[in-house]
Length: 283
Length: 60
Image (cartoon, rainbow over all chains, first blue to last red; front, side):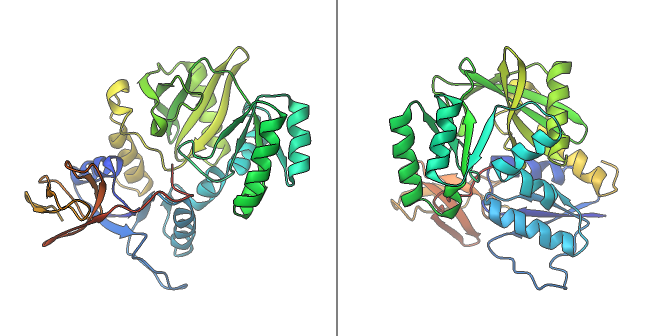
């Protein structure tokens, strides 16, 4: 019997599809771990699980819970190290840079004046992003100096402290679409195009999905990006440019419900296979 | 953990919410009448609550 700790909060269709897939497997027991109800005592096991699969919505809870489970000797997918890198866009960019994975130009500054100077040097438009955040939330395309000054003042005045870490990315003209590539272990299992009339193409913001054939070049850059952040089960947002693929972001609690139909790939099945293999079981 | 055609009032609009047979604890569902997102807090007896609002570190 393999015991899976299923770390979650709210259960969305993605989580239900995973739970349904686990339920179809023999000799698998799933223990639900609600991050809103669990508490940890350092030095004492919180759950009896062979492996924990993380499906939280809150990055902060996921990161800390994963580290606590690992401290109890329980392997986790993804690891807390992967969560720490992917949950922070600056840490992701550093990891991609250190592994020579192509990405849009990134600059970082810690004061509004330094951020403004960096934007002026880069040339407009640029994209100002919170280091921690998802679903396209609080992204700003900055088209000129006036907008830059206003945004920086707002972030400094209204934002919490981590909004004063100014993460500035060169704006990439992506022709109305980007690619979401899904990596499970050592395989790029599927990819979709996300298209939108808006410059933000996240499906959480209304982007439309269609199948993107996984070419060898796309798989190669996706796997390089995944390895750069520590591997596991990740989804990479990738731009197509005349100079080749650029990895924009890497997500460690990937949402996939809208990608099964267009790709024809049973993504939850692939994830569950990987988790069971990692737990030492035969999927 | 599964519910069986459980029914209960929406905590927002008081409309009737019917759960499917595969509904599980902590699942997010929609009220057909008011469109609000609800969380299944308990299955027997059914208890629904307004789903929590999106937080700054929510995401993938």
